[in-house]
Length: 443
Image (cartoon, rainbow, N blue to C red; front, side, top):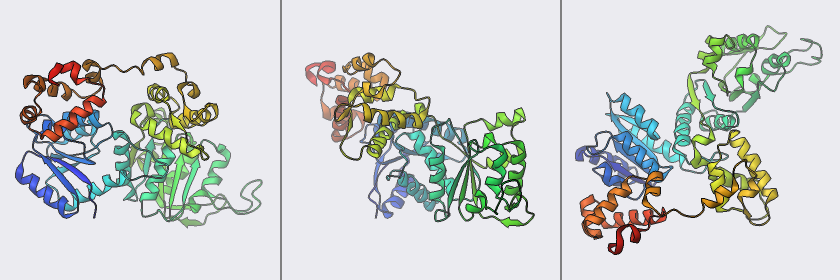
């Protein structure tokens, strides 16, 4: 059985015990905190379940503080049936998912298992930020259905990788996955490529040929850059989706299809519909389960892990590492080309490096390398850390001052164990806070 560590933040003792019982029987280790502030002072758990009924802090503020604290933590909110707005705000703050109370034990366990699956290594997918985990959680839900999926996102964000994830998590995973880049195929050929053709259907058609839809039968077809598809092909695609059958160009024989359709685009299809460039009826056929892959600049926690992924991918013969100035440069850059640009940069850096470390100069990014080097000098003032990290640190420091640095009295005042307080103080030191300087000899 799994021994995954779960932190439950629930003020109602009766409700907490029912959740703890379900999770413990399922093999999970569960810690329980009754207040939001005391929970923020605990060591991070693999998964945190937080109630919307906290008395000392709102659930969405709690999730926001939690994500600032751990960067890539998994948080599940439990909200009441009439708290739809709160659920939406909590998701925007960084929750991976939420449950509406009352819920069945099976619903809780299924959600935990889906989230748990996101924590396991995945081929070709790196998801450390809460935004990425949110998208993968929705993708996992989409995979459990046979409905059409529309993936949106800027160029280079990894839309095809996400489409493959949906396919691999679905019951069609043993079937084919066929990807078609609609923008890369001449308009005159796209219809024949998608739907196939019979011999003599057009000049050069010397033999019958199956189309991509037939090749994907029993599996999944990805129509990438679907916003580039001409109105004429859009009309024929709509019929294929409605009838679940295809006719080869030059033939009137219908071929039955059993496929899932995933479309991807870097365009705003609603805007294209308003312009008359994309069929409205086709848009609604495709946009059953929408997934948006955020740009890399909005999920910066993914940048360094993805960089390490590409180092391992392209550096097979020896070890190679990122220097501290390279890490800062990678994190500061906005990546207009997203993951595709990051991959190219890492390939180039592996060629340009002069030793086992990749430096900021090796990356050759359009940023001031000297300013990056200056930022390597640590700023140990509390204001710097508070601005970048949790406001909770100030609360702890105030209590420490109040009790002359006495850990036991401070922990009691905070409502946590002395062990939890020691962990938090160690984390504060790791963030650059010099407790001796801030608190004086009492620290």
